[in-house]
Image (tube, rainbow, N blue to C red; front, top):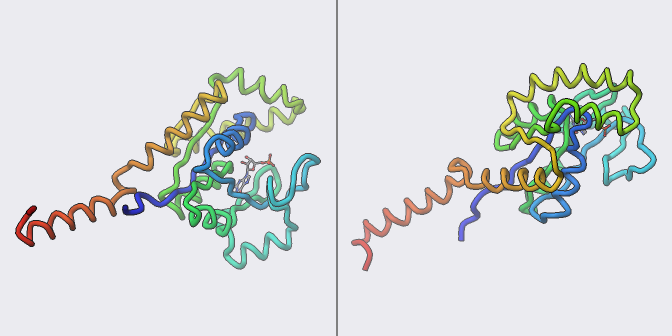
Length: 214
Ligand code: 5GP
């Protein structure tokens, strides 16, 4: 059988408190079609994080070197630190026949789409505005920080219009199923399956030319 489609990057973006990291972790534990694409950051490691699992924590110098060597698909400043997606992380997963799933900011998402137009961009928001505020408050963030994030959220909403899908994250299980269903539907897009059509056409022509079906 012909390989049906090449796996494509799946990008989840959301305002802070949108729940994208939890969704990503749940998708990977639920379906072996997906894998983490680990990104790099210059921000300090948090206590609970593991280098090489949550992020590659790198120095400013290393980050500079990666940019210079063209090792990153995209990179951006987010909350005063640099974050970037190494090409090697994404390609390793695609070569293994899996979908790289990334949680990156909206600017990064736009840049990945430019370089890898087969990517699918999913914007995730809580079902209503009050829930977004509640989630930020429940994380224990300072009110002043929450208000900084509100300003960022407004800018992010402008980018959201350029995404392929909008998913309302109300119940984790439903959200995870929505994202998996989006990806499975995307695999059936005609443009991702041109090789099947081409092969069918070739076989039909060959059969007609050799005198038809016997
Ligand atoms: P945090 O520091 O809370 O882990 O992440 C801060 C923000 O950086 C989040 O919005 C996250 O999605 C984004 N981010 C993480 N990795 C990357 C990356 O490789 N590229 C870009 N552009 N943003 C990223």
